[in-house]
Structures are given as C-alpha cells and as structure tokens.
Length: 379
Image 1 (cartoon, rainbow, N blue to C red):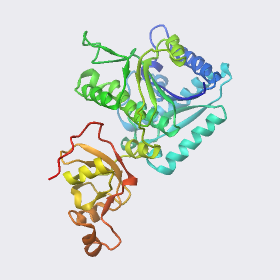
Image 2 (image 1 turned 135 degrees about the vertical axis):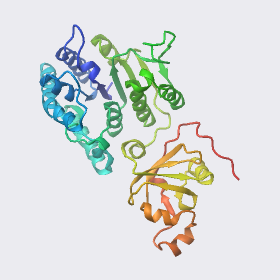
Image 3 (image 1 turned 45 degrees about the vertical axis):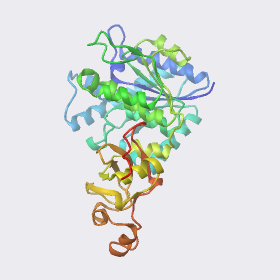
C-alpha cells in the first residue's frame, strides 16, 4: 500500500552504542527505509547529528555551548553526515537529497509552501529527502530547538500519512520508567485530550519532564491535530524498525484527530514565532470558541509586544490561558489606540480604513486543547 511517511531519528540513536557504531546504525536504517521505498511508500527522513559529528571530527568530548561554536561544529559535521547517509543508501540504489531548514523558512507562508513543493518534487522523482535543521545559520530565536518539532512540521507540509519518531525507549510510559518502577506502558493515545493530559504530566519536571519525551509529545500534538498518525518506537533494534514499517504494534500509537485542521491552520498554530500577545475579555473568548468569530478590538483587554501589521500573535483568554494564534491586522501602536472601542467609533476616531477587526477568523486558529479552557458564562 502506497503511503507517505516521515521518519525522525535523533542524536541518541546516531551516536551509536556499545557494539554498534554510527555507521552500522545508518546502514541498518538505510536498509529498512529502502525496503519501505520498494514497497511503494514515499519516505522523508528527518535527522540530527551534524553537531555531534563535527565535535567528533574536532575530537571534542563536550558539546559546545556558544551559538557560534555550535554553528561551526554543524558546518563541519553536516557534510560528513550526508556523506555517511549517501554511503549507507547507495548499496540499495536509493538516491538521497539534503534539505536544510530553519524556522524562518517555515514562518513565511510563501517559503513554507515552497519547501512543501520541493519535498514533494523530490518524492515524485523517487528521491529520499534527508531533512535537518540548518544549525550553521539558525540564530537562537529562529531555531526549532529540537528536530521532533521540525519532523512534525515537515509531516504537515507534505501531508504525510504517518510520522514515526524513533528513539532510545521502547514506548511512552505514564512516568519515567528509569525512576518509577510503577510506570505503566502506554500503547495507544486515542485523542488530543489524552495527549494534553500526558503533556501536562511530562511538564512536572525531572528527567521525564525536561528530557526528550516532552518534545516528542509536542510533535505528536502538531501532527495528530493535522490528521497525521504518529508512532513512537525503539530505533535501536533494526528488526523492530522492519516490523514497525510492516505494521506491527511496537511502541506507542497516537491516533490522528477525526477533525483535522487544514495545513494553513497548522502553519498558523505551529510554524510561526509569536511577536506579541493579546488578552481578551470573557465575551470575546466565547465568540472565538463558540462562534468561530473574528477578534474585534472591543474585546481586547491588553496588548503586549511591539509588532507590525500581519505579525503572528498569541491570544490569551480572560484567565490567561492561550486560546488561539493568528495574524494581526494592524500594528501594536494602532491597536493600543483601538482598545475597548467599537467598530463604528474606530473608523471615525482612529482610522477610517479600520473596521475594528484585530485578527480575522480566516487568519486565526484555536489552539486551546479540546475540553478546555472552561468557557465563561454570559454576563
């Protein structure tokens, strides 16, 4: 059966382990993914590893901390990373392509669509794209920070059927199994409500909360909200990867939302970096959540940040919890003058070209989790 997959591998797998080198892991991964390609699937690989390989070449035992050192190490390691992948896939007659992305590439709608078209063209040519964050160029504020998020956004961009997150644990647990003997394995996460509950638990701190599992849950939230199935599984054993690609029940499955948002809404919710935030009153909160309305100036209680028109914003409810994200129709300075005013008053006192809409409903996506927050009652 033909399907489109995004497979993500992280540094914990690529650095190898006792008895298996980085090159041996890549050889096993290339064999598994090439076999999946021969079965008719389209496959995109999202990978880490450039900084680690650069440090290995420099014989540095510690990961750099300064941004310029990380970027320099990535510049050394990225070519080596692609060279290793090319040698791993070549025996299987599988052509690979390097695609480097930063958050700014996906924060622009035009560049998001161009990245999507490029990846889809490579797949049509039978090429396996290998995607990595462009650590050589990304500044701190424009970094994804983890390739789990990048893999989810790539899955949204190409409308993948499934995102497979390969890691160094066998599945998701109710808590960190390394420190809690009572941790229960979780085989299936059926809804966004379940996923939100797990994410809240993961945010409590400790190794489970601050480690890689939190970012994987965030990636699962992005993908499943867009109608993409997600699998979290152990990538250390190549037989597990083989069986996983053939449909086995290894790992934890995250079921896709039965009511997925569009790729544009997914882009608004997850690809953009907010430049400011607004807090709204209870009436505006009800209108956004229950009526699918645009956000009007009369419902905005406060404005934070210095931004221009079309800037991405977080929209907070009356209790301070995030409700939505969207693109502002005006600058922060103009919006400050509009606060609390009704539409007719705005056109006559602030700017006759403004109609009181701060964020149009077509430029807005609800990000509040299903079942929350509690909708305030009418006054």
